[in-house]
Image 1 (tube, one colour):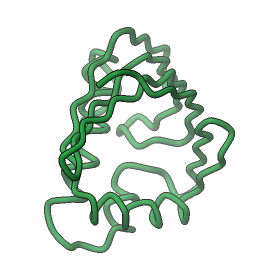
Image 2: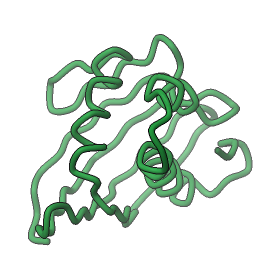
Image 3: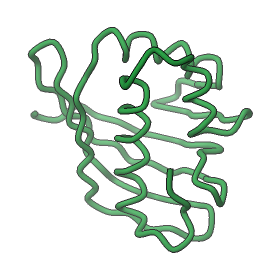
Length: 128
């Protein structure tokens, strides 16, 4: 995982989500270890009003591993100010023979070593 400091914010966002997913799918390692590599212990994500803490994030890894999606993150806009990143991106996923696309408005806070502390996301499905 790369540091946020000195990194293009668009590249950072794309790499963060694709690397996290790739690491989850690479082997059967304890998902908590992978979640902790990318997130702080007190991480809180709010996605469309749904609060996701560390335990819920770990639970979410089960369906990701079961469905084994391939993903691509297309970042349209991204800016960073210190530990804060705002981005608008489209998450393209293929799973079980279906193509899905979700546009995300993302506001996140990261540690200097690149782990997510918090995020607020608004999403909408778009044509794949």
